[in-house]
View (cartoon, rainbow, N blue to C red):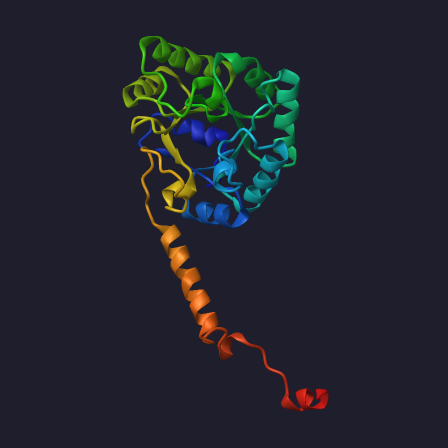
Length: 275
């Protein structure tokens, strides 16, 4: 069944949780889609795991559009949600709508995601009025890492927890169809989930959210620069890749590969005439 913003919203409060994973290319998107994931996030985390940046701030609109379009070609049933990169919406409503439109038209996304609470509600409202679905993102917002002083758990004090709860209600009122909660204490995430009518998708926010999201390279054990506490590695694909490459190199050096079954034939008479 094709996943849409409507079907995702309908999963709120049901026994079936929303599954979301990141993808940045056609092949990975196709595999995730075939496995039945509800939502594929083209995250600006591509700055870390694909482009090798230390943070997401350097990611551009062109980066997001390029990778979003590739993912959209591979995802037939999953809803593709694409991040709006740093400074593509913070500068005002006009820029936010224009850039969201580019992600939808050129990146072929089904929705956009942006970070922030009440401060970006005018942008959310305007983007939604333009006919573009918006997923909000609260808690640890990586694009604001310099302002918040690093990658820290959010909402641990009473004031911070109250602010996060108010922000969740604000983005819902502005028209967001879902909200990602990142690095939020589990009990606070549970309260937020119970306090709003749109789905919450957690990453490091406990099991009571309406869904979960992970970076697929983290989940598959392919990215080893650092492993956040909230990551569970469901496989060790990185080890498999390294072992396969070592075998490839060894077989080349030993003359085992390519074997006869990997080569094409030509009539010997033709070759003899070439000498």
